[in-house]
Structures are given as C-alpha cells and as structure tokens.
Image 1 (cartoon, one colour):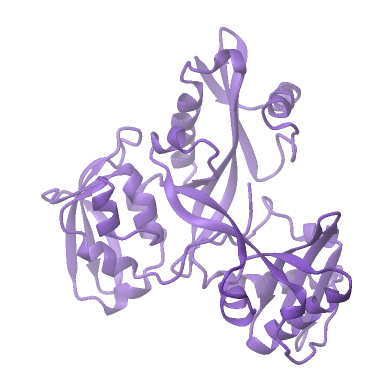
Image 2: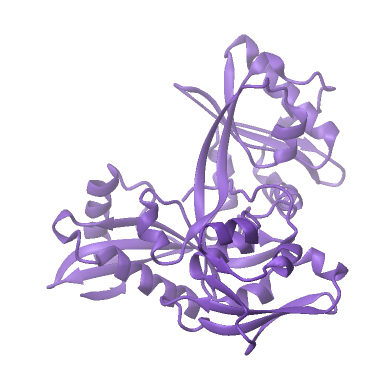
Length: 376
C-alpha cells in the first residue's frame, strides 16, 4: 500500500470516491487550508482523507489542530487496513506540520478509537419554541455589510476564547466573507466600528437554522433573542447551534423536557509535550509546584510514548522526559483528559488510566462541556 499527498491531478478521482461514499462531495477536495492523503493499492486509488488547518481554544489560548474528515475507502478495498494506514499517516503528517491535536466526527468510532481518538466534546443543536423568547429590550440591529466582517470576527473571538473547544475561524480554512452568504445576518453595532453581537441564520424548507447567536453582554444577547422571537408569527420553532452556552443555558426558556440534537467529536493528542506547551492552563497559577510521573501507552505515536513527567511550576506546565511512570495513560485517555470531558476516575473505570490522577484533574479544572460550533 502506498500513501501520498493528494494533488490537483487526483481531484476528479477523489471527488468520485467521496460522491460514492457520502452521496456528494460537499466542499472541493482541495482548497486553501485543507490537504488530502490518498491511499493506493496495486496502483489503484483505495481510500482518502482530508485534514483541515484549525486553531482550537483551550484555556483561552489557541492550539494548532488538524481537523480530519472525508475518510472514505473503496468498497473493494475494505477490510485491508486502508483506513488505519491513512490515519497513521495523518498522525505523522500532522506532527510534522505542528498540529499537536486532531479532531474528527466519527461515524464508526471503533476505527478511530483504535488509533487513539476519543470522545472529548459536543456539537449541539437546540430546538425551541419561538414564542418563549425572553422579553429583553429591542437591540439596535442592522444588516451585515462587508465592512463589518473584521469586527464580527473580533466579536466571535471575544466569546470563543472563553469556551473550550471552539475554533478561532481564521482564514484560509474558514473565510470571513462566508458569512455574507447566510440568508439572515443581523449585527448590533457598538462604538467606532465595533460589533457588540450578531445573529446568523439560514432559512430553508425545514425552518430557521441559527448558526451563530453571539453577544458580548447580556443586553446584546437578549436583544438578539428578541429579534429571533420575531419569527414567531411565521414559524413555531427554530434550531439554534450552541456556540455560546450562556445564551442557550442561562437566557432562553426551555421547559424541563426539550429537544437537543447532539453529535460528539473525538480528540486525539498528536504530540503531548507540544500540546501541553501550547495549551492555556488557567488553574496552574493557583497550584503549588507539583509533578506527576506518566507512562504513556501509544503505539501509533511513538514520539511521545513511554515515561515522562508533567510538571507544574511558577504558573506554567510542561512535559519533560523521565519519571517513574506511576500513572499509566492510554492514548485514548489523553484527549478527554486534555479537554476536561472526563476526569481520572472515569478514565480509570474505562480501563484507560492506572494510578493517582488527582493532579491531572486539578490542572484541567475546566467547568462546562467542551464544544465545537463548526462541522467538518
């Protein structure tokens, strides 16, 4: 089996395979901020995957992340280890390019778990009655214009930096002017060109899908919710992608039972020392100097497997070689620990951790569920 990078000459064949596997190609197989890996068996295309360039917020700091998607294998090549070989090649590729984390949405989790990815966050849509919107004051909204794009991005980043897991939506992977293609976009202007908040939605045959409702303060959020409630005379319900959990969790009026559609995403730590160095660790400033000796079990990423020491000192965190290996961590444990999705007790019960992981729990100290608001 040969695995190589996707080239422009391969696009036609790649699009054909993606169309067979997924019923359509979605985005082009090659575009800025995205690359592909192609597997060949006996000179024939057997499978492919794509990797998108992202930066994901953890502890208020962005960490380089490779978003893996479009994993497709030809029907005749299934059962030959093509997907596994592609994933292993992707791990090496991401490490070489400094993408110290990887995220994917798994339709067949077992394949990805076998290579070290594990559930570490959510992608959620909330459905709610439009006649139950909070009665906030009307916001001074206006339509989006192209000159607003930089200010809208700054508004998004202001909120996204406080929600673990969200990506920074930086170009070229996500183009700022994509927002101009939404059918409904309202902005709440501030002073000197600032944007205090915005609402972006798509009206289709199924109703109203709200992709973003982002505000820097409660008055802006309530004003945008009131505008959303103005659709009550046309529609009964709307679906809101949960970007800011404060909006959906603290301001909207869901009853005891309400409809949430959840997709889970899997996180993989590609390079543990580099990922720890890149992540923000807000709780480290409040911890006394301490260390935990790890033994990382990771056959698919040998560059960080084995014994190492996680050190907390002077408000910073680092991973250095050595130590006694007192706490044994499987590769699958690294993602949910890094994200704060699971604590050491849950990881131990799942057979992914042995030893005392108390310092690991105190270090992450991340309230709330990690989430993404972009699907790939």
